Image (cartoon, rainbow, N blue to C red; front, top):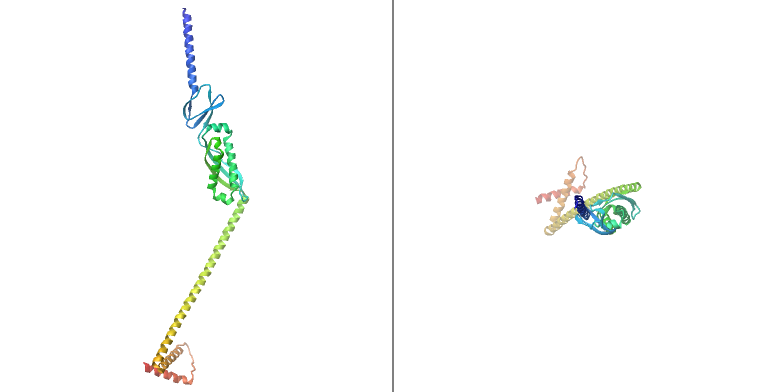
Length: 297
C-alpha cells in the first residue's frame, strides 16, 4: 500500500474523531446551563414551555431545548407614582405611592403579561382611587396605615395570576390643592379662636362659681356665729331665770343693776366731748345699783 494512501486514511480517521469530539463538546456546552442565584431561566422546547431552571447547574436537551427568558428574581421598586383621587366629601387629593415586588413564578410573568411595571402601576392607581373614594379627608390623613394595608392586600390579589409577590406598598404623601389648603387653614384658625373663647368663658365661669362659694361660706359662718351667740344669750337668760326662781326679787334687782352699770361704762368709753342727758330718777337708780353691787361684792 502506498504511503500516500496510508497517510490519507490516517488523516481521514483523525478528522472524523476530531469532528466527533468537537460535536460532543458542543453538545455538552449546549446542554449545561449555570443559573445565577438572582435569576431563573425559562426553557422552551420547540416553542413551548418546557421547564424553569433554578440557581445552580442545570441540564437541558441540546438543540431541542432553548433558554428563552432570563428573569431576575430580585425585589424591584416601581418609580413613585402620582394619581389624583376624590374623597367621599368631594376633596381632590394627589396621592404619591410606591410599590415593591418580586417575581416568584417567571413562567406566569413572561407568558401572561407583557409590561409588568405598567400593569402594576395601573392596578395601584385604580385601587388607591377606590379606597380613598370611600373615606373622608380626615380619615385619609388619620388612617394612612390602614389605607396602605388595604392597597397592599388588594394589589397582591390582583397580581397573583402574574406570578408576582407584592412585598410592600407605601403611600408617600397626600397633597391638597392650594384652595383646599387655604380653606383648611382658615378652618384651623377659626377652631383655635373658638377654643380660646371657650377657655376664657370657662375661666370666668369658674371665677364666678368660686366667688359665689366664698360668699356662701361667709354667710354660713356668720349665721353659725349668730346662732352660737343666740344660744349663749338664751343660756344666760336661762341662768338668770333659774337665779330669780331660787333667790327671788333680789337676784332680779342685781341683774338690772349690773346692766345699768355696763350701760354707764359704755357711755363713758366714748371719744371726745359728750353730753349725756339722764332723767332725774336715773341717778337714784344708779345709786341703788351701785349699792347693790357693793353689797354683792
